[in-house]
Amino acid sequence: MNTTTLQITFTNTDLSVFEPLFKKFKLKTKVIQEEKDETEMTKEAFFAKVDRARKGKMIHMSREEMKKLIKNN
Image (cartoon, rainbow, N blue to C red; front, side, top):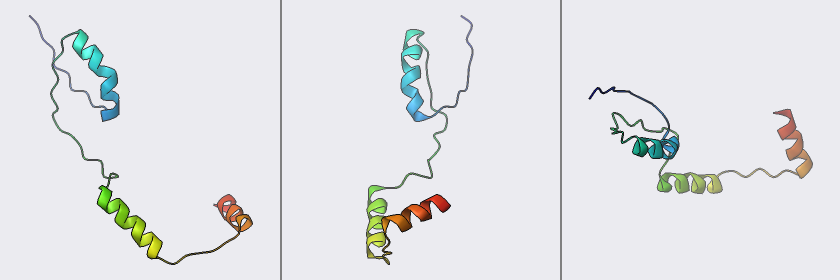
């Protein structure tokens, strides 16, 4: 039997789309390299960041000032 090897790169969220197709054609899969997402942070790091923000300097402004600031950026 002839075989073909393919290397495909896609996001983890797209895996659920391809899995039924892989099963239907009895395809074998192998994870070669899983890249780490640099934007992810641990739960502890997230809450530490929230705590630092709460302890930081507060800025008080009216809704009009906030809308003006958002529009200008």
